[in-house]
Image (spheres, rainbow, N blue to C red):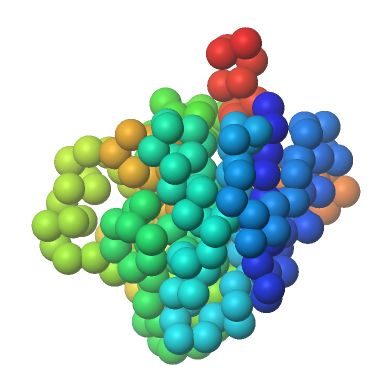
Length: 232
């Protein structure tokens, strides 16, 4: 399974996720400079976290115009897999590959923590390594991670089972106290209706190395490999 990680000026999580995919999982991984426009050799495109183009104007607002992201749209339209983490999630919403927007956190503070999230469905490549309603713990680090959308969009996400992860407490209860940034419906991650595009604010790549004694994020990447093996 060939992975590509988009590299923007200002990105700081591209090497982290490449390390997990290439060195932990042993998969071919290509770093894709933001000016590249040919992604035809890739099965999965990852838009990493960080501060693409310095987050000038608005998080992800400039990145959407890069040749690599234009090629990522074509990649997604072919039904291939696209994953955006943190700033990558912001970029995907700016491009319209995912609905809604990520706005300033409820308390206007940058949050850096490890939080429990609940897996809402486990029948997609992104989540098949988990089971439904499983509570996992992943790191978060963002100032603009509050998911916002109009009420009809939220309803559509609910109706089409596009919410994959919600912030919760350690018992799996979804409530305001367990919401670190004020996201509507405690949304931590969503997919498009086809299920091939994922956006999430928590960082699974920061919880995928046994050396860190915390591997709740590893199952997400292992689920992707199960998909590849099933296709092969």
